[in-house]
Image (cartoon, rainbow, N blue to C red; front, side):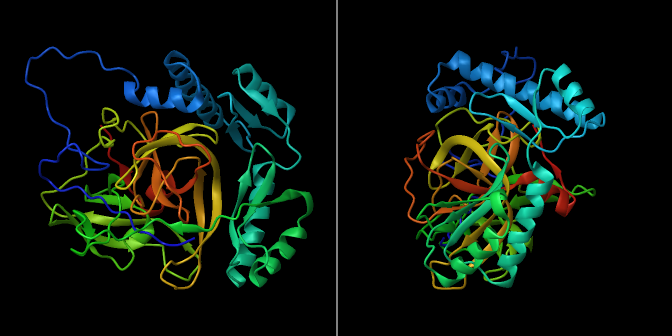
Length: 404
């Protein structure tokens, strides 16, 4: 659980194909016939198909099915449906937790799978909150993370070193919660993925430390911001792209050694902007950002980052709390409110953009210490990472996502 910063930032100048995360969109000539754009980027579909071990037609069908089911659930909840959590299973089918017969009948009539869990999301969130409170009293060194696993209907605690006294104390508290908690030994420590590479072109305060760009957003007055992982803008630095400052950190909820949330924003300098397409480091055509609808657990997701490029996987859980270890010997930091995924990331990817289909999802926060990823490797078995959900950051800072 060591800390690495990933900052790839966008200035208002031309950008080459090897620049990460955010690229400028170019206009087409007036009057030219426009070819019909595919619903999903072909290269993304190709990577997803390889990830799932299916053909590309089946991959497109899965994306369509996930989007359709998510829209049905959104419509139902807006119409007053009482839901106690929902998740997508390994086959791409969305299951809804309901607590009463009427809600179950409405969900089934819309074609959604339904179950009545022993606990459900609300109760599991209360269990998670009790563990968060225990971690606030004493940082649980040796405990990698804890999060709600909706599909399994438990809170899963991942332990990297159960022999540490702090871990023993935390696990003793967890044991009081009975069957609502499942303890798993992983041996993996986690880190905020912020590394220092000499000569980096996208850096912090003109130095060599860097992160990867997240998403552009605006406030009610139209002021433009970069939404990023909080540790990427800790200390409110000036952010540079290609040797020129393009943004200035304005707020962060991350503080080393303190109970934190890994979200932050930087104000974009005049004359610069963040594009509404996600750069893929040449792995695929840059997917346009059409919205920020939060995808369900189990949904397909890809991320762009300065160190590992374009990598993909699925969403594993939301409302994850982790313990990050500082590689420089500083104090451990508990971070709340993250999402976990099977996407591979490394140091320098922090702040990078996660997208599901054409819906923006979040920014890289961290991952296992020493994890190695293949650049532009698509899905990579056994890997994992954590990201800050974009929707939570936009809501907290009162911003609206920029879309193409």
